[in-house]
Amino acid sequence: MHAGPAGYGELAEQLRAAVRSVGDWMAEYGEFTPHPSLDVAEDDLRRATGALHERLRENYPFFHPRYVGQMLKPPHPAAVIGYLTAMLINPNNHALDGGPATARMEKEVTAELAAMFGYPTHLGHLTSSGTIANLEALFVARQTHPGQAIAHSADAHYTHARMCHLLGVESVPVAAGADGTLDLQALEETLRGGRIGTVVATAGTTGLGAVDPVHEIIPLARRYGARVHVDAAYGGFFRLIADDSGDGVAAAPFAAIAGSDSVVIDPHKHGLQPYGCGAVIFRDPGVARHYLHDSPYTYFTSDELHLGEISLECSRAGAAAAALWLTLELLPLTADGLGAVLRPGRRAARAWAGLIEESEQLSLFQPPQLDILSYFPSCFPGRPRLSQIDAASARVLDGGMQRPSDQSLFVATYTVDGASLAARGHRVDADVASGRILRSVLMKPEIEERVPALHQQVLDLLADA
Ligand SMILES: *Cc1c(COP(=O)(O)O)cnc(C)c1O
Image 1: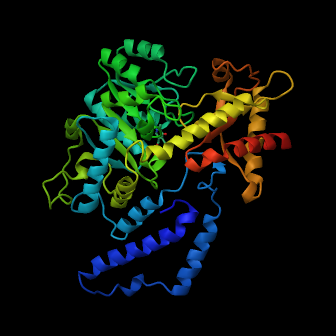
Image 2: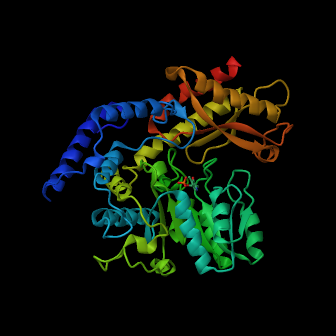
Image 3: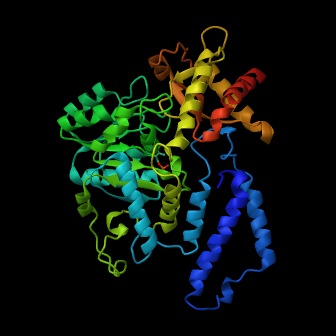
């Protein structure tokens, strides 16, 4: 089965088979007549779906290698089949009473994710998103370290500070170093103050794909009695290719996640899943005690663990678990399985970074550690001013989107200031407080063979101005 529009004929076949199979299962319970209040006229249905199709055209082409903007792409067809098949039944993974089959699948995929990270024991579940998964990890951190603050990199995802606020916990941003990773010296100074109960390490920042040195953060945090949570929402699946090889990523920080207290990973980013599928995993199954609650109406058919007993959310789509389960049956969490989907993005990032370094028109903001590229137009008479870089970046962003579909280019931007440019050795006149540079997430394997063309297109858009 092929991914992308080329495989949509096959996908349609598989979906027909899914509808048949679920229909057969339903028929075993005997015929009944759906209530006429639910009937819709065929003409109305055609008109409304036609309008939907039209409205969806407003999207950017997330599926296409021409789209190198944000961390967006369609799910793998296997995930679509898994999701839609289970959705016809619509199980709710809050309780085994609501979704026995998909709750078991959720426990299985969670165990596979825990094994990928090397946790010897675990407790965890899927969530609607990385944000909710991090909220749960920080909630448990607050319960195990009451009254203490949570430290995270200044470059960590913005929701950490927001979730700390929500939890009534002080959040302490720690400076990031010149490569966008958490600065160990600054962290030690913060820890010395004595009020930090938990350190958040980010294995792949959302902005730059910078991987905090988890292997150094854990021993340092332990010396001060602090808990360590790893936010691997974006970068977690790179664990599969963390082998220090030419098209892999650094081994040490990813191997060290095994020694953390909790980890968050977003299957809806690099796990080929539709939104919303995040996951939170704790190494100590004993943290279940922090979730204790009573519910007179949800748990009754089984004494086995109901996922709602260890989750802050109540209703969750069983379909999300079915989607991930089916995907991992076909593309398992191995270097040759899902890992092979990630390597081309790494190669693309390295190759494009090389072209940028050789070019006179563009500069690399910093070398990519994962598959996120940050770069900026730097060819101006005299020393470049940040306001010029901002304007030229905006021209590439806007100009690329305004081209006809089959010649378009979609990049993203990233806001920097004079200090972050200077820290990376860029001699730029910071005539404005902040400005945009270019950012590209190369998360589709098809991008690799397009790199020279994509690079040329950025140069053409710059020359157009
Ligand atoms: C995407 C991301 C989040 C937030 O996850 P959502 O699924 O978008 O809610 C948190 N942390 C990191 C590092 C991320 O990349």
